[in-house]
Image (cartoon, rainbow, N blue to C red; front, side, top):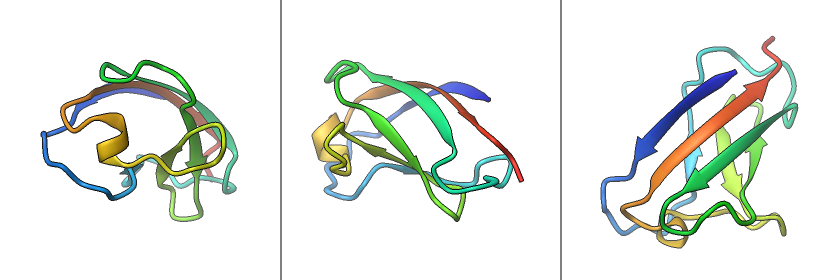
Length: 86
């Protein structure tokens, strides 16, 4: 389980929000859960995808990947993430 917050740097960018270099390798892709909030858009529709490279990727409830522009370039992301390690 990881917990923390990240302040985005204000750069306008259409790339997908991903967190890499997790402290432990994920045992299986998509095995885990998370709670993310962000101050520019609230908590609506934020889900997490965990891939085979142990990266977390933010998506909305329709499965659409969230970009930095979508979330807000100056957003403060607060999170709690749990996943099974290999």
